[in-house]
Length: 79
Image (cartoon, rainbow, N blue to C red; front, side, top):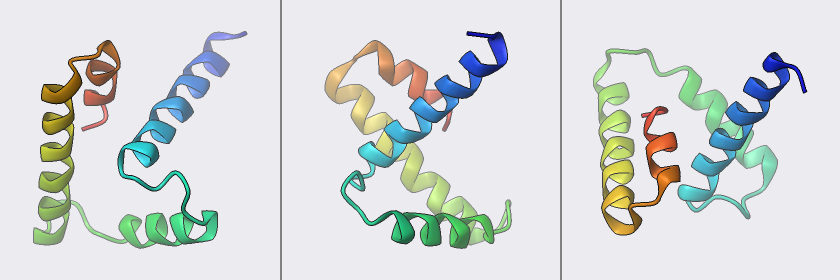
């Protein structure tokens, strides 16, 4: 496996973990894509962006306190 493919596979794995962590692993794929498209329209630096970022940051912190697993450190790089 080339370095680029390995990096891409790791990125997909981490993004999939975020979907699972959010409790959306059984959600309809069209629903997920629609939600992500909507999120992409939230401009960085806006109040809504900060609000959503804060929710996610708290979720990462709460999870890291719960399990202390090494994967939590990997997921933290996405926060």
